[in-house]
Image 1 (tube, rainbow, N blue to C red):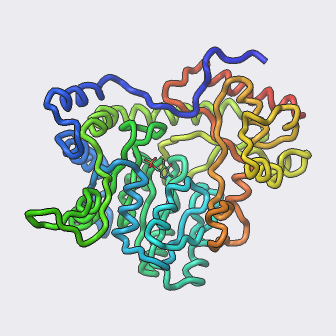
Image 2: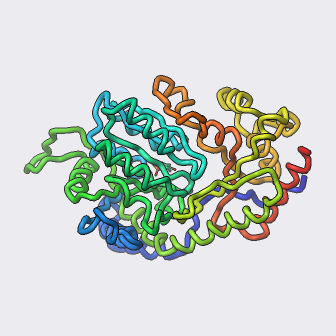
Image 3: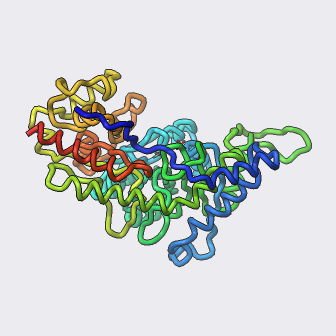
Amino acid sequence: MPNYKTRISLATPTLHGDEQKFVQEAFDRNWVSAMGFNCEGIEAEMKAFLASGKYDSEPGNEGKEINVLSLSSGTAAIHMAVKLAGIKRGDLVFCSDMTFAATVNPISYEGGIQVFIDSESDTWNMDPKALEKAFKKYPKAKCVMLAHLYGTPSKLDEIRTLCEYYGAVLIEDAAESLSATYKGKQTGTFGNLSAISFNGNKIITASCGGMLISKDANQREKALNLATQAREKAPWYQHKEYGYNYRMSNVCAGIVRGQLRHLEQHRQKKEKIYRTYEEGLKGLPVKMNPYEKCSEPNFWLSCLTIDKELVYSKGGAGKEWIYSNIANGRSVKDISHEEARGIGPIELAAFLDAANIETRPIWKPMHLQPIFADCDYVTAGDNTDEDIFARGLCLPSDVKMTDEEQTFVIEQIRKYFDMCR
Ligand SMILES: *Cc1c(COP(=O)(O)O)cnc(C)c1O
């Protein structure tokens, strides 16, 4: 099989040079430590960005400010949100189930207990029907942790209505969805608290870093204090509670200031990549990751699912095969194509890997993870996310991917399905 010259990546940082200007200034002014003019700059710029769209005209949001705080990672921002939501030992939190572990681990840092909520098939995000069922089962739960997977907005109206009805705090994990909008409004501005990430593979990066978004200026102040070791106001170092070292450095803030200027450009390229896959994979037994028409995803990762009939009947992977291989610690690379003759995402991944194309499995649902074996999982009846996991794969979605490279990826996928016929 002819390999492509260089490996085609899933998603890597795309830098433009503007970043260097802000970083240079940090060096020139000898200000590379945490908190500085770039941190203030990115906070002001991000606030303006998030507030654009329809934020101010939304009922209930008039006069409410968006408060942002730059932090060392998206995970740190989620942790701060969990603390501000008041989650304490034994508190239940309804969580997106099919997501990255960083969405839900910070709940455990505070002694909270996750109740995992199945996904729906329209957006792959939290199923409002399953969430309603969970509220009925656990009426005491007071917090919902909602991830917008792969940059696709969740069913926010339905979920927000449920949160309001049951008096629950909504936390949005918008780590993957910066610049995605729902009914014209930015994701990350719907929750009482939200987190975004500037990790290296996200739509824009600070090399690492994240941001907490809050509707309440006091919450921002509280998070700022916690993120800087929780010092009390006193002439000496005085502590009443445990603090953290979670601030973003002035260097990282400089990188993301440069990146923010290219966010829309990245979003457009990601959308073009998605549309090109959509067109190029027509006629194959696959579907692209779906979204609702009232939303505009940022298309962070393009994903496909292989049609059910093939995966579950063609002697291919099936769930058990995938689970047992992953459970045994095997990576896609170790699985030869001969061995993986069936039709399934892991086999397709192995095939593409041999052609020097990087892919990634769909996030394995949290309720299937050994560390969360004791947690409850609520589904409206379909175990939709287990099905998406068993049939789905994330495709190369790098902003720098050339048309020629994407054509090669599409050709290889077509070739795989030709071989499987
Ligand atoms: C990347 C990511 C995070 C964590 O962000 P970091 O900045 O890497 O800590 C959290 N949730 C989701 C869904 C993510 O994709």
